[in-house]
Length: 371
Image (cartoon, rainbow, N blue to C red; front, side, top):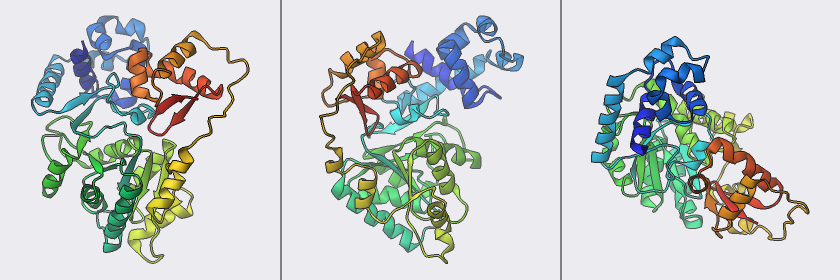
């Protein structure tokens, strides 16, 4: 059943003219990708506004065959095919309206670690930018060694961030703009291989997908969506790292930028982010941890928070309280969805109500805990 659902979700991403938004809308109404394809003939009665073009495109035996082959390739090469039905699917991405339907992941790192950051910047990194990557991650490892570092494996700041993370013992994941049957640029192949043992590589693109320009723009949303915060190290006035920062802001994620010299064109983007209040000025790991409230003193939340005098709970709220209570250290959203069997679009409201009633609190990494 799960295998078929994964294949059908892969197929949805290949329907011409549908797109992520359209595919997600179909899933929301139909309930599953399996129903969309297996009950296709009744789909127009379920979704009256479904265009004939999309309806006809859903009859696609060759596409389904290709997706079956893609899944076999993944299984042969130890690649996990993650959908939102999987506990390992990144909980932070669940919060994004344009989250991928399927993620292809090879690696060892937990995609739901409590502390995840992304580091991005120019492909023409200067010594200043390279040094910032290494000094920042060296100090971050000393203060918060469980941090997971996300970037894009590109030339410049991306590869420096990955290599600095590996050097100082932090797990690191590259978000790719192509399938996992190749590494681009090829010169970074050895670093990528090392990362699969100390982090990983991840993409939404199937095998044989070429690293084309538009794919890099698409993958930027995954870099931003996987992370609690995006850090721009060095950027010109225009560039992909600024797109990532803009997406991070649209997701209501924290965004930081290292300042540079006023006359340095490769720092103009960072300086503009700071000046326009699109990013917080950053100077080091210690102040970053404090800004994120990740320092241990800030995490000691007083246990004297009072619940409401009349916490009238709905059946769903009572059920969620009972499940969360079984996990004294807290439970991640993905695990809670799996254990409760409540869909993501139905679970967020009772969780919000429980938080407002002072019964639960949200910790970093999408973890819910009883107060």
